[in-house]
Length: 372
Image 1 (cartoon, rainbow, N blue to C red):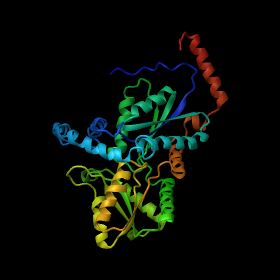
Image 2 (image 1 turned 45 degrees about the vertical axis):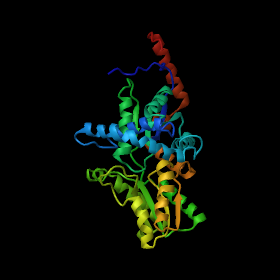
Image 3 (image 1 turned 90 degrees about the vertical axis):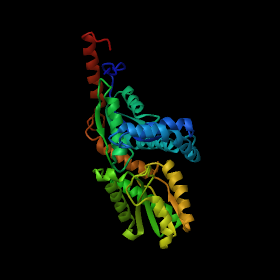
Image 4 (image 1 turned 135 degrees about the vertical axis):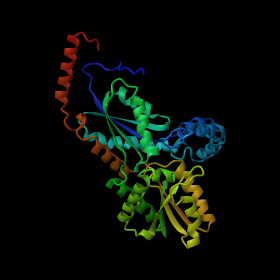
């Protein structure tokens, strides 16, 4: 393997802590042409679709059928939510605001430099480009924070794969820390509860609060993925914070793909069945999504609303994701601060001593004939 050389380093340069904030990603445009490479990258990830032993069969299905039909349909869905949070894709726009909000809360706790970058697992800006950005800013310690509150191999582990794949090409590897989950972080739980209270202060309380999470195939759970369990932990803690009984909330799973069994109950089937049991006033929140995106704005806000109303439902409210709310940014900043304890720029930094040491390093290097 040919490793990336470090050409921008000079003896005496200061170092920094880098924070890479990541999320799933989005296509570059709501078009069939932009969706095809995005979906290909996404569906070729073996963490997302664990292929059968005959991997060639999945590639045949993906390239011969799915990528010939799905991009056009997905483009229509993306077009319906594009620009809903400013020009471009809502997930990207919100993620950029989240990075800025987290940075504003973290920086005062650092005595030395701390730099931030955004990286998407699929699409742009990529995780590789985010890491390169931090590298070019002299970050010798990097914390990776995937904005997935609950751990899942298809999301969190896939992010680690992408980080590892990029770092395997570097000659100079930084210190690395990786956040795998924050599903029971007190600040995150309180932010969810606060967002629900605020929504209900304007729209009243429903008969049932539905907490809908992205689904995964049942076999992932059977093989040991903790995602299903952590979704239920989050929901229980939010319900306790709100003082809800078990009868006042329900956990469901959305966005299934393909014909195999996924973890249940399914969100869409739940929406079709609730009115039959006299539940005609509901509110839905998606605690597993840190930012509003296609799956929340279109799938929950529109598609599942139609299922519910067509089945006889009367009042349907969608409670937005936490996005760049102040209390959400504070919770995520607390996660960053928890995981950066003990790092040089954070806790034991003396600017004058650091400058003196860097000057000494530079002088000694030049005396030994080092050109940089």
